[in-house]
Length: 308
Ligand SMILES: Cc1cc2nc3c(=O)[nH]c(=O)nc-3n(C[C@H](O)[C@H](O)[C@H](O)COP(=O)(O)OP(=O)(O)OC[C@H]3O[C@@H](n4cnc5c(N)ncnc54)[C@H](O)[C@@H]3O)c2cc1C
View 1 (cartoon, rainbow, N blue to C red):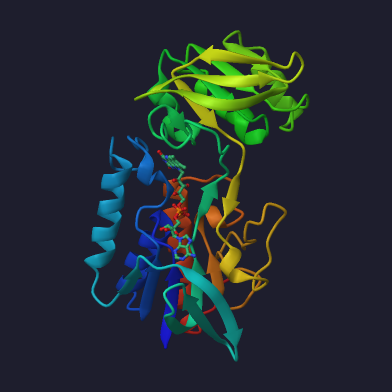
View 2 (view 1 turned 135 degrees about the vertical axis):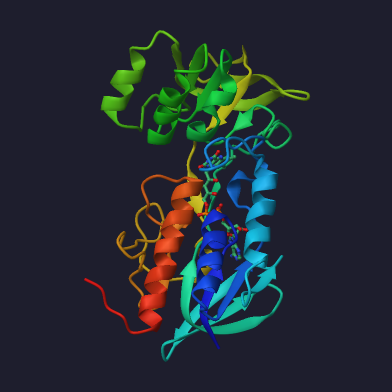
């Protein structure tokens, strides 16, 4: 019986692992792999205390930091497939058929980006295809880029790109802007922006790096091409919550609802943090910080400490 099982090995999972070990909580960390979503990023420039680091090196550092802690047990390369509660005990089953029991659970399983599923998207991932403008906009200084998707994430990506890119296309499949009207009105005024509506992206072009994209102009029925250095895909993300069933409450985006003071979910004994939660800003540092908050609260819970 563990005191705590952490599900995930991204920045949130790693931070939780280090703090749980240092609090001497009997902990098991289960992760498909260490590092999380920015693993594929060529250059992370906002991990505080580190000016520049590749996603891969960041992942290695996170894993090394967790493994250096005494007492923590780790199962990696496996996926949690189910979490069930019975008599205040959580039973956790993995894809490889292992099962574990714990008094508390911290869900830090993050999310995955919704993908277009078109040619070029996988091949040029990290080679001009980007998924996080807050993170990667500075890498596109003086470049021509397209943002696909005109929800709030897409509009904000456009805004994040203005200080760096020389030209930004906003490509939207329908004739409606789903994001906030106020943000749209604001970005529309910038002469760097060109908006292409009713455009279905068909292919991202390029051999070693992005050179453009092909789209179907639904109005004319013609296929057209744009010359580009980068493509930001902002069509939403999918929280990794399938293994939880109805154990915890989620919001309309399927993100786990948490009390932002403690990271507790609606289910006593279950905490969540990072991109899988309904936190407003999805970032490495925020995920790590919120997971630490969760572990400190779990430590209080296990020791019967109540704080006001
Ligand atoms: C391409 C890209 C670049 C980015 N660059 C930056 C950046 O420069 N700076 C920044 O601050 N943010 C960046 N972000 C955002 C940042 O990566 C996320 O905010 C952050 O990774 C969230 O951390 P997390 O630990 O909550 O979740 P994740 O990073 O999503 O980690 C989830 C973890 O859970 C594991 N997992 C998932 N499901 C299961 C399961 N069922 N069982 C076991 N394990 C599971 C995964 O393997 C992974 O270890 C970037 C995002 C992307 C997509």
